[in-house]
Image (cartoon, rainbow, N blue to C red; front, side, top):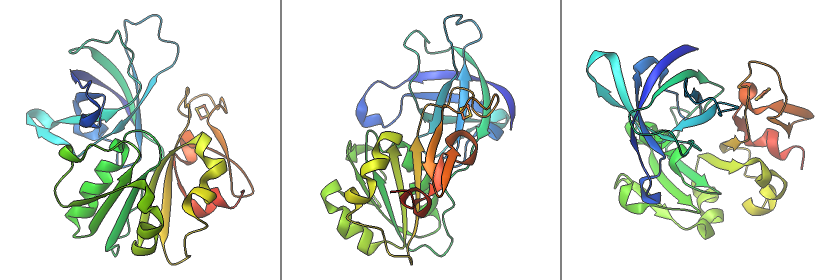
Length: 236
Ligand code: FES
């Protein structure tokens, strides 16, 4: 992890694009699926905390060791296309897709499924079947190999998959087990990206990103934001 400079090359406003912006940055900055970057605008004096950005698709390589990345995050509205950003990352613990996974279910419980799309690309590249169900779905911009489902199909997908990845908000944790219709069988590897406010990104130990997991609490910024689902369900 280190500090880099990147450029907002495009602002993506349409929901079907599954991303907030396109970022051109050194290839080493590219977060693995589920990891994140922190971005600040050096000349935006009103910015109190960095913006957290997740990759929302595979990287497009560019000359000079750079990549163009679709990113998802709450960008500040006054950052224009072309803005130079200071970047810190990649940060946190991402998804670990087992090589043996043959049936991958991606479940976006709230908002855009964008944060799961880099994982979809990785799963397709290793020959896994991929099914995606999301609250907000942009089927037109998904690779055709991805099977698209309604969130109502969740029990069916949990029964089908041998690897499950969820994207959810910290506020979803309380109702998670009920929403899943119980705990997934132990034979399934299941992980969840938990979105929480991460103002210091592990730099200052502020504790704002703390969430209940296992027998205590975990920091989403450092010990997550991806957790084993069993850790999250153990407290409910
Ligand atoms: S964001 Fe400050 S400790 Fe996690």
